Image 1 (cartoon, helix red, strand yellow):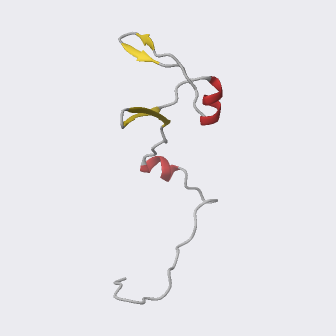
Image 2 (tube, rainbow, N blue to C red; image 1 turned 90 degrees about the horizontal axis):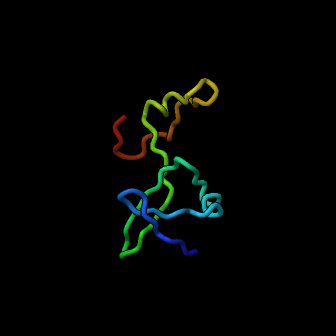
Image 3 (spheres, rainbow, N blue to C red; image 1 turned 45 degrees about the vertical axis):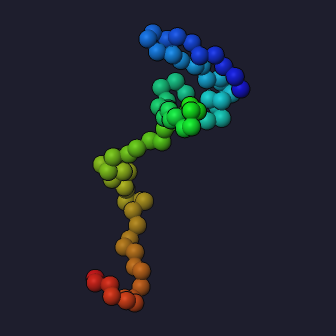
Length: 79
């Protein structure tokens, strides 16, 4: 697909067509990573980074699991 680069303030911008935003789950406010590889501009949706506290807050009595065992000592492990 081809699009045109346009001026936006002191920067340049491109419009992402709706069919591409649907295929990539990108919407207004999404964070996009911009990379340059071998002279090519590559755009891809950023993956969400979670803090440890955000992850711990999602643990509930319903989804917590018990201790996991890996079996008896077989080598020089120190437990």
